[in-house]
Length: 618
Image 1 (cartoon, rainbow, N blue to C red):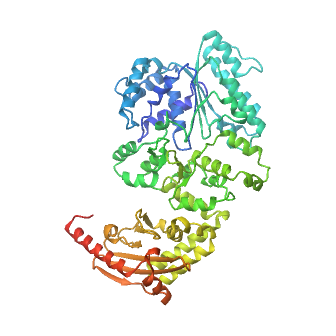
Image 2: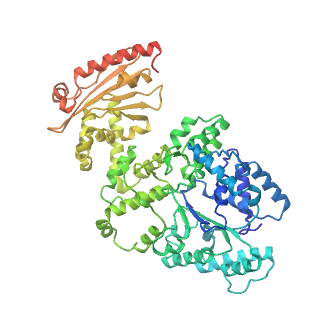
Image 3: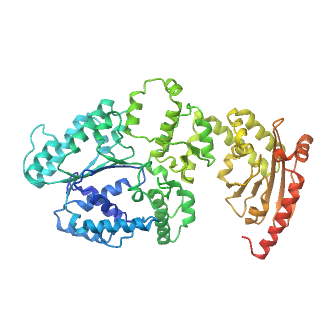
């Protein structure tokens, strides 16, 4: 075993993974790879965000296929794979099984018909491992110098195995392998990790460097008889545009398009349930709440593996995103100068979804952006607003900052872990000052609500509507709903906010459940006591907020309700007489909060209390 040929590094890394406490068996992916061996479609590129297990699969490929001369290591690997799904020929039930059992049966039948046995493929190929992020260790060299050194090191390792002594001055790796194939008919499996590193590093590499690099991969791999299979992975797809057309022989599988391999690059809900049972300390519901929410392009909810394994190993649920690098790189993907983007990101941070049909994002987008970096940004945005917005959202899905529901054509922030990071970034982004102002006002309005200060509540809401003209647009289609969400945006840190889906016209109907269930206060905006508030014993605030369309004035009533005593206490200050008149005299068209509605709600609550005492309601 060498560094590149039958890589000892890949072998060791897979053994470490296998011996880990929370190993999940993804070896059935090799069955699919076996079907591609020495076929026309033997080149695949799988692009996923960091933390989704791309390198783990790369290490497993090396450990599985590599010819190893050391009998001790060979036997050790055989014992490992004997315990994995890949060694089972019939009735395979992967840890990542889908609900479509018919597809599973068809797949298993296909495996048996083709006789692609474990014994026929395990340990039967030499592998060549290339990790192009290693170029950072050669920062003083040009790209051509680095590639020349890489070629020579691989050829030296191959010559130690085959002893044909074909290495001559200025010979390149593709030529060496062609000569070797002619003499030995030896075929290789190529494993290329972080292929897109040269496209990610804008400062280190020029457009010409990228052209040289793509030509190198094309000459090394395309239509070469010595290639039995090539697995290439990174965050970006090679794409088919610009200079990357030379890599169009790869079949691409991205976060936006992958019906074949998606199940092997994430943890399923079933797998996480099983890991929780092994852990015995962390609750699945807590893990789901913080880390679940990514969607495959089939619509299945998925977890990123690194956060789950980190939480289980540490027995602590917290934010593990920083383990993959500086999250502030998200700033490079957000362009607040694009028309409408600030408003849309406010919606995203409020757990809303943005309707958009994404077109994808790959290395060609990076290449074009680099070439155009000296063009004035404003000139680009003026003519290509929608195109740039699509590229921005596509890139954020590709990098794992957002997820995409391909069926509904919606992007959104997938989980609490990512929400926390977006919040952190936005608070420190000078281009998004509106967010910092909203957070400041939100803290004040939450304090005012808890102290039943209706005048301050109305003043803050009115100030938000006046100060941010962009928010005024929302009156036209969702009335108070967005204003209330913006006003209480920071309450997400202390409360789980439930938005009622059956609210009447003109109403903002929310329930704020405190994360501290024993010491917190439930806040109900436009009452829903009978159905929801009984989950908590103790203090509940009933908040009625009215917006009058004619003069765009707000009015508010806050009542404290003690569940245990069935007592209501009116707000400390009732505001002006005009406020009270607005509440008591508002008409049905505006769906105001009125006294008849209060009576009806109290009756509903009394009925619910009876059910609660009888044990019929949780």
